[in-house]
Length: 419
Image (cartoon, rainbow, N blue to C red; front, side, top):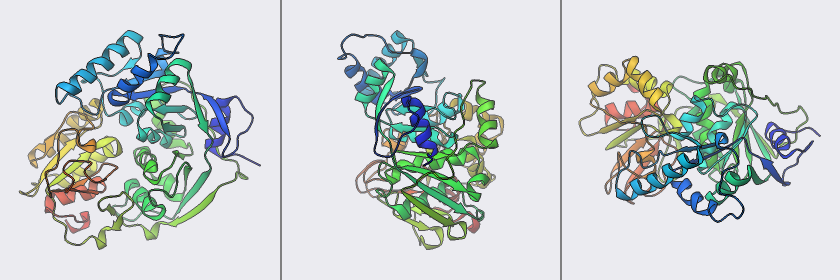
């Protein structure tokens, strides 16, 4: 019996010829990621490990302060200081404000994650990197601390759900719409501790940015990881980011899948996830009349240059609705600079948008766009749980950059077609 991409990568990192779903393995990690929130706890746990006071390999440990940075208050400044001092003392890869970005946009951009790797991170959206043909998954801070010390992680091999998209995308349908459609079908628990393997004609059509977006939200269906096969687009992206080597794995023709789902692209139109779950999705044609107070364009889900281009293309020469606050957050400094060179930032400012330095900010209810009671926000982020972005009576609607930009102009949720 053959193996899936996920199984092959895990077997290779466990030093085994094969693995099967449900099997417990110890696997060597290629990279361990932490942000300031997961790192500050991991530092405490690392200090409790006997026999070591040094990380196993500083060049395989990445620390990115991005959730409450630039520091929003004294407490976040104290957390950032502790993490900074640890990172510098251990000589890990550390990305300070001004040189950083939102972690899950930054690592692919910097060539730190590549096909065939096993990456763990102290953040659930570490699954993003599966868009490049590797296994990446979020873990707790204790697991991060142990991996810092040993370079290994304890894992159970997940079963794989194969999701095949047949046909081509309709106008304005993006990877964000495709993953929202999948989550709407599976539910937030339909893929619990499974690998979601995305295939099909429509997948080959997607940009790498869209694949990263889809992998990013695999966790919203409960998945252990999301993964895509490597193709020419993947290789071009990776080679533009780094000259470091990588390994390509493919699922065997006789690989065993726990479930196989086929989705006809004719079924998918632009999607909106209503409060308070990413699975509470509706096609844009069935949204109705929903006015909004705020729009967020950015995050680790949709903060790449391709996303900003889509939004700027719709906002060009226009003004956002006078009732709406529109906050644009480029995913990294590099994305920010590219958007500046292309005139996208000027477009946003002239449209009366706020442009922020890279930060997770409003996505986690941290800063840069907290909602008051009863307010509604359309956001390109990945979660719309109760109270996540502010007051518990506020509402978050998840959508693509195209719908977000159109909504900012109209003051209510609309399709770009309506513009």
